[in-house]
Length: 143
Ligand code: SF4
Ligand code: SF4
Image (cartoon, rainbow, N blue to C red; front, side, top):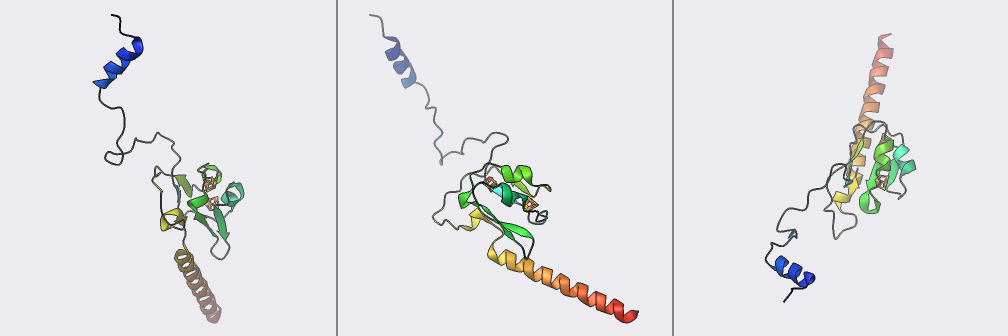
Protein backbone atom coordinates (compact mmCIF):
# COMPACT_ATOMS: atom_id res chain seq x y z
CA UNK A 1 0.00 0.00 0.00
CA UNK A 2 1.26 3.47 -0.90
CA UNK A 3 1.77 5.75 2.17
CA UNK A 4 0.18 9.23 1.65
CA UNK A 5 2.86 12.01 1.44
CA UNK A 6 1.55 13.83 4.56
CA UNK A 7 1.72 10.66 6.65
CA UNK A 8 5.24 9.87 5.47
CA UNK A 9 6.31 13.41 6.45
CA UNK A 10 4.72 13.05 9.90
CA UNK A 11 6.33 9.65 10.43
CA UNK A 12 9.70 11.02 9.29
CA UNK A 13 9.47 14.00 11.64
CA UNK A 14 8.60 11.82 14.63
CA UNK A 15 12.18 10.58 14.69
CA UNK A 16 13.86 13.96 14.24
CA UNK A 17 15.10 16.27 17.01
CA UNK A 18 12.72 19.18 17.98
CA UNK A 19 13.49 22.36 16.03
CA UNK A 20 12.63 24.66 18.96
CA UNK A 21 14.82 26.80 21.23
CA UNK A 22 13.80 25.96 24.83
CA UNK A 23 14.53 29.44 26.25
CA UNK A 24 15.21 30.16 29.13
CA UNK A 25 16.87 26.75 29.52
CA UNK A 26 19.07 27.67 26.56
CA UNK A 27 20.38 31.05 25.41
CA UNK A 28 17.99 33.15 23.29
CA UNK A 29 18.37 33.10 19.51
CA UNK A 30 21.26 35.49 18.66
CA UNK A 31 20.19 38.88 17.35
CA UNK A 32 21.24 39.95 13.84
CA UNK A 33 23.64 42.80 13.11
CA UNK A 34 21.91 46.17 13.31
CA UNK A 35 19.31 44.86 15.78
CA UNK A 36 17.41 47.67 17.52
CA UNK A 37 17.39 46.83 21.24
CA UNK A 38 17.41 49.02 24.34
CA UNK A 39 18.58 52.57 23.68
CA UNK A 40 21.86 53.54 25.37
CA UNK A 41 22.66 57.17 26.27
CA UNK A 42 26.17 58.53 26.81
CA UNK A 43 25.51 61.59 28.95
CA UNK A 44 29.10 62.88 28.74
CA UNK A 45 28.97 63.10 24.94
CA UNK A 46 25.58 64.85 24.86
CA UNK A 47 25.73 68.54 23.91
CA UNK A 48 22.07 69.23 24.66
CA UNK A 49 21.08 70.15 21.09
CA UNK A 50 17.54 68.70 21.56
CA UNK A 51 17.38 67.17 18.06
CA UNK A 52 16.48 63.79 19.56
CA UNK A 53 13.58 65.37 21.47
CA UNK A 54 12.26 66.84 18.21
CA UNK A 55 12.39 63.62 16.16
CA UNK A 56 11.15 61.11 18.75
CA UNK A 57 7.63 60.09 17.69
CA UNK A 58 6.76 58.61 21.08
CA UNK A 59 7.57 61.37 23.57
CA UNK A 60 10.31 59.34 25.26
CA UNK A 61 12.85 62.13 25.62
CA UNK A 62 12.70 65.25 27.78
CA UNK A 63 15.13 68.16 27.79
CA UNK A 64 16.48 69.32 31.16
CA UNK A 65 17.56 72.97 30.62
CA UNK A 66 19.37 73.36 33.96
CA UNK A 67 21.94 70.73 32.97
CA UNK A 68 21.59 70.96 29.16
CA UNK A 69 21.07 67.17 28.90
CA UNK A 70 18.10 64.89 28.16
CA UNK A 71 16.27 62.22 30.14
CA UNK A 72 14.65 59.09 28.73
CA UNK A 73 11.78 56.90 29.91
CA UNK A 74 12.08 53.86 27.66
CA UNK A 75 8.69 52.45 28.65
CA UNK A 76 7.33 54.40 25.66
CA UNK A 77 10.16 53.71 23.21
CA UNK A 78 9.14 52.13 19.88
CA UNK A 79 12.77 51.32 18.92
CA UNK A 80 12.61 53.37 15.71
CA UNK A 81 16.24 54.60 16.05
CA UNK A 82 15.45 58.08 14.75
CA UNK A 83 17.09 59.70 17.78
CA UNK A 84 20.27 57.69 17.16
CA UNK A 85 20.40 58.73 13.50
CA UNK A 86 19.88 62.42 14.24
CA UNK A 87 22.30 62.81 17.17
CA UNK A 88 25.27 64.85 15.88
CA UNK A 89 27.76 63.59 18.48
CA UNK A 90 26.88 59.86 18.62
CA UNK A 91 25.67 60.09 22.20
CA UNK A 92 22.98 57.49 21.44
CA UNK A 93 23.09 53.91 20.20
CA UNK A 94 20.78 50.90 20.05
CA UNK A 95 22.12 47.93 22.04
CA UNK A 96 21.48 44.17 21.70
CA UNK A 97 19.45 44.12 24.95
CA UNK A 98 15.85 43.01 24.45
CA UNK A 99 14.89 41.18 27.65
CA UNK A 100 13.23 44.24 29.18
CA UNK A 101 10.13 42.77 30.87
CA UNK A 102 9.48 44.24 34.33
CA UNK A 103 6.71 44.56 36.92
CA UNK A 104 7.52 48.25 37.49
CA UNK A 105 6.94 50.62 34.58
CA UNK A 106 9.41 53.09 36.11
CA UNK A 107 12.06 50.40 36.52
CA UNK A 108 15.57 51.89 36.68
CA UNK A 109 16.51 49.77 33.66
CA UNK A 110 14.03 51.76 31.56
CA UNK A 111 15.43 55.17 32.41
CA UNK A 112 18.43 57.22 31.43
CA UNK A 113 19.50 60.15 33.59
CA UNK A 114 17.46 59.53 36.71
CA UNK A 115 16.53 62.27 39.21
CA UNK A 116 19.57 61.69 41.43
CA UNK A 117 21.89 61.86 38.41
CA UNK A 118 20.29 65.14 37.31
CA UNK A 119 20.80 66.52 40.84
CA UNK A 120 24.44 65.39 40.79
CA UNK A 121 24.98 67.14 37.44
CA UNK A 122 23.35 70.32 38.78
CA UNK A 123 25.64 70.22 41.81
CA UNK A 124 28.74 69.82 39.61
CA UNK A 125 27.69 72.70 37.34
CA UNK A 126 27.10 74.92 40.38
CA UNK A 127 30.56 74.06 41.72
CA UNK A 128 32.15 74.84 38.34
CA UNK A 129 30.31 78.16 38.21
CA UNK A 130 31.48 79.10 41.72
CA UNK A 131 35.07 78.11 40.90
CA UNK A 132 34.98 80.27 37.74
CA UNK A 133 33.59 83.26 39.66
CA UNK A 134 36.24 82.85 42.38
CA UNK A 135 39.01 82.69 39.75
CA UNK A 136 37.62 85.79 38.02
CA UNK A 137 37.51 87.73 41.31
CA UNK A 138 41.06 86.66 42.16
CA UNK A 139 42.24 87.84 38.72
CA UNK A 140 40.48 91.20 39.19
CA UNK A 141 42.18 91.73 42.59
CA UNK A 142 45.61 91.13 41.07
CA UNK A 143 45.08 93.83 38.43
S1 SF4 B 1 14.27 54.91 19.40
FE1 SF4 B 1 12.55 56.15 18.53
S2 SF4 B 1 10.94 56.02 20.08
FE2 SF4 B 1 12.84 55.33 21.08
S3 SF4 B 1 13.66 57.18 22.05
FE3 SF4 B 1 14.62 57.05 20.02
S4 SF4 B 1 13.28 58.26 18.65
FE4 SF4 B 1 12.13 57.86 20.53
S1 SF4 C 1 20.59 64.60 19.81
FE1 SF4 C 1 22.36 63.79 20.93
S2 SF4 C 1 23.52 65.60 21.58
FE2 SF4 C 1 21.48 66.31 20.98
S3 SF4 C 1 20.32 66.33 22.93
FE3 SF4 C 1 19.95 64.33 21.96
S4 SF4 C 1 21.50 62.97 22.85
FE4 SF4 C 1 22.15 65.06 23.27
